[in-house]
View 1 (cartoon, rainbow, N blue to C red):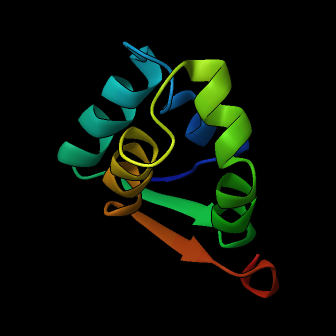
View 2 (tube, helix red, strand yellow):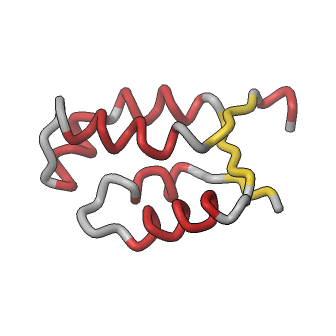
Length: 82
């Protein structure tokens, strides 16, 4: 099975006690192939200050830890491939 992850899903990874984070990890651990558009990474990084403030996490340490956790299991694609 393959699943495309959108911005709302990735943004939810930063919320404390995120159900979505646990659910996506479960999907990935059960062999579901996860994809996201490559521009989403730039969008997340450009909004890191705002995301950190909204989710009340440390911008430098917690943001990057949460950012790289889902990215390990998500394959990025370009819009051309859609």
